[in-house]
Image 1 (cartoon, rainbow, N blue to C red):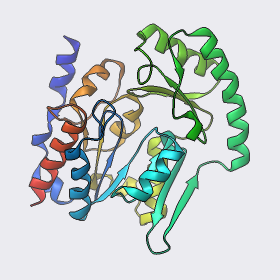
Image 2: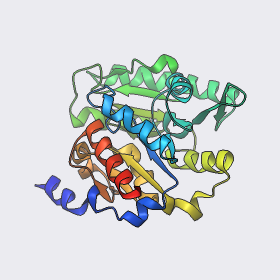
Image 3: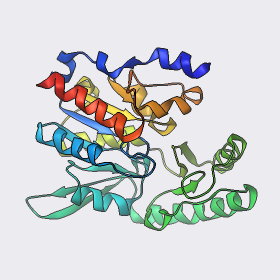
Amino acid sequence: MKGFVYKDMMLPIQKLKPEIAKNLLGVFFDIDGTFTSFGKILPGAYQSLWRLKNSGLKVVPITGRPAGWCDHIARMWPVDGIVGENGALYFWFDSKGHTLKKRFIDPEKIRCENRKRLSHIRDEILSSVSGVAVASDQLYRETDLAIDYCEDVNPVDQKSIDLVCHIFKKNNAQFKVSSIHINGWFGNYNKLKMTKIFARELWGIDLDANKNYFVFCGDSPNDEPMFRYFPYTAGVKNILKFVGQMKHIPTFMASEEGGDGFVEIVNTILQHRA
């Protein structure tokens, strides 16, 4: 019943006003569960990225995925850059210089110290919470600890998820629950803070003064800072699994889940801009 209440609070994405779409400068979007469907990038979703890019809009994934993935995405996808590891970094490909550029919140010395601190938390979580595991992409991470609770392991119950969060919290680490992982880190950053830095440093755009010109698309609690900040946000339908745990939900919602919902959002934006 609660899901239906929250669903009624989010407008169908088709209610996005044409004048808003026409004035957009870009689209920020989460990857897992928003752009992907059951861990896969479907043809329609990837083609939607090209359609956004070719329309002249700025396109930037904002993800909890690791630096190693961000290297590939910044180089290979039709995007203007990527914010990764829940805001610890952004990467972008300099097409003129044919080089990948990297920007971290913290210098390598601090990142190394934090990784040592996180290794102790990892050991505590694995010895205290049955069923979870270190995420398979952990080797490619620079700044955080990702605990898998349903990607490559059988889904665990909410009590186990809460216990992992409790262990991060008691060790004074930041943490966020995504659709597949629980990510923990040391440092005062999140997806939104690094997105602001990205926009200012690469585009010369003050997001505080221009946030009306961007849409953010997401699907889970680690997207809450973005949902709270941007006036125009869109969730794919699978966000209904998490809204009961969230204080800030999207303005709009697609009728489809995952990548199909992303396509629906893109179609609406581009139809209004035609």
